[in-house]
Structure formats: C-alpha cells, structure tokens
Length: 179
Image 1 (cartoon, one colour):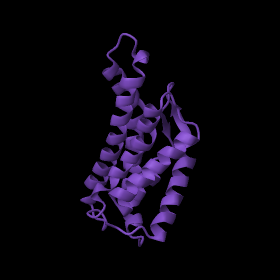
Image 2 (cartoon, one colour; image 1 turned 180 degrees about the vertical axis):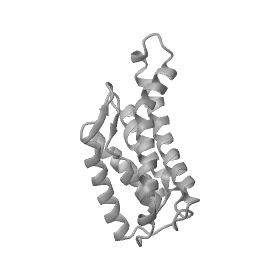
Image 3 (tube, helix red, strand yellow; image 1 turned 90 degrees about the vertical axis):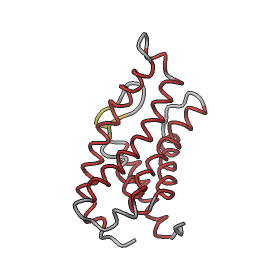
C-alpha cells in the first residue's frame, strides 16, 4: 500500500479543484443532467494514473461529492450516492495500470487509452443503472435500458474521446515529473 504523502494529498487537492473548475465549462448540457465539459475528468484520471487505484478512487469520489454539493441532481439519497461519489469514484480505475505506464514509450498508448476507457466505463455503468432504476419514466415507450444507454453515451463517449486524446498527448512529459 502506498503511503499517503503530503505531496500526494496536495496534488489530489489541486487536481480535484481543477476538475471542478473544468466541469463548469460545458460544451453540451444534456436535458436531464450530464454534460460534455472542457475535460473535467482529465485531472482525476491523470491523478489516478500517477498515484494508483486507491488514491484515484478517493480523489474521484471526492470530486463526485463536490459536484453533488455544488449543484447535483438529487432525487433520492440512493440515486445521489450512485451517481456522484460512486460513479466518479470509478474514475480511479484509471490507476489500474499506474505501475506499468510510469516510464513512457509508444506501447503505453494502449494502456493509457484502456485506463481511460475502464474509468469512464465504470462511471457509465453507474449512470446507466441510475437511468434505468430512477429515470425510466423519461424513456416513454422505449426500453429503459436502451434509452439510458443512448442518453449516457451521448455525453460520456465524447468525454472519453477528449480525455483519451489529451491524456495520450500529455502523458509523455507528465510521466517524467517526479512523485
């Protein structure tokens, strides 16, 4: 287990603050919540990739709690917990390959993209379940699973693409920064 150093905690705080700031710049806002932002998940994904799974989950869940406090969509306590601290905590999955992508080389691109995919897929699953369980009335006559899948994909797929591209571009110089 990694020691929670002062440097790690300071970096977590900065990345969470940057993620909150970036989440305020919305390119697209979905009608019932969710948005394509200016890369708001990138700081959390980057933190998880640098420090690992557990610190990444904690940073992601903290980011989710802050999003909830700063104006989340709350319909029930269970829905709020599922869609904020749990869903954003899954962004910590980007840290799953943290030890194997430390030194940069061209083969690391696949692991970087896979890390981002796993993290956003975890978040996607939480929102998909919440959509089916709590918001199925918005599906009308359509199957709630299909409706929720399409709805969540409308903003999380673009977020994945932006995050994967930017993290692939910045990982080489970032990987040289000492922890």
